[in-house]
Length: 187
Image 1 (cartoon, one colour):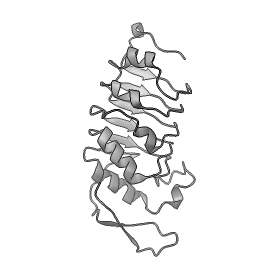
Image 2 (tube, helix red, strand yellow; image 1 turned 30 degrees about the vertical axis):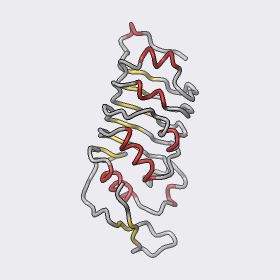
Image 3 (cartoon, one colour; image 1 turned 90 degrees about the vertical axis):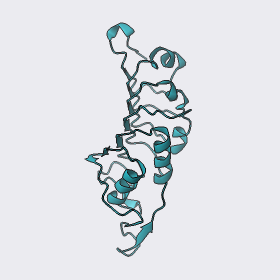
Image 4 (cartoon, one colour; image 1 turned 90 degrees about the horizontal axis):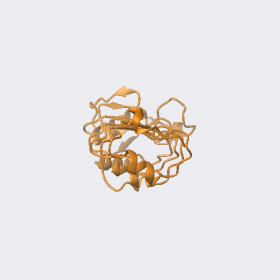
């Protein structure tokens, strides 16, 4: 694993893409946690995120293609209130309500979130073969997240719009009548 020298003036960015990491080595945490604002750990195999709370200056986090589930988010030791951008594309988040509750608790000031390619995201981009089997459409998904994350400005590929009633919202009809409503609950 090649790590940048502090003399290279890259101390605000730490990019460890495709390093087959399951967790962050303690030496890296000790050396870079205090100054890193941008962390990219895409294309790894992360299972433990407990070390992430050590990165107190972190504003931008990319965890794309790590096969992450809700259980890995639960390993964080505490919230990262300074985080503004979170990229979780192409992971394995499968419970929309649980995922958003965790994100809201762990990243309370999040302004940009991307979940493309996860089972919970009906993005229409065919990044996940089973996203077409969800009981809800993208409008419901985006509005549910917008309601839950009050500071969010941008979701996936578009600015956040907060204009729908959240008590119930029509779902995509697979084996149901087109006018079936889903009752939602407040997180």
